[in-house]
Image (cartoon, rainbow, N blue to C red):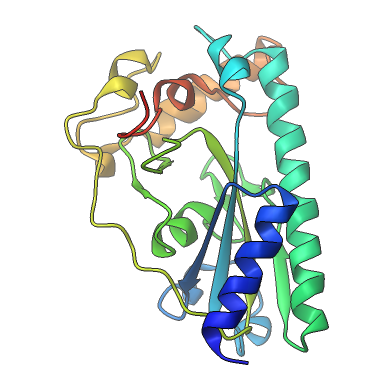
Length: 225
């Protein structure tokens, strides 16, 4: 079966499963950044990036801190993504290929914000968005209001093309960040200040995980009114 047919089948399957964003990234250039066995990665060439939109109404409730409702929604969406990744992996394996679903939200080191791989980087390579000032992936239609999961595979797929876009004149996230971690230049994002605020939210009992949501609420995308 030719590559394009597998892409078509993947898009159809994921749409039926409730996925809002799907893209394919060629990953050979970034494999060394993964915290995974080299043996596992030998035959894997692609990363499938899947995104599910967050509820605008739940995000709307966030003002100066994350809410209990947002925390629950965050966990449910991550679980939903993990289930979808499993279903897609089973589909790929049924075709005789390898598939490795990477958890949507399994952090290896919270202080360094590191996981088995960067779902954000895979999504950007797949053409689903660009690296925003808020240190999140910004999609043209959804902004940063979605969650991601990745499946690594050797299924022969046609990779997407990274978008040649950026946040442009939009600076909605800069003014709302409670610790000023977001800068004009995305590369200057203050990871330490952000993490310290996440710890403060956690200690205050707002969430049971290090999350915020304030800049997620602010980022609605360049083409969403």
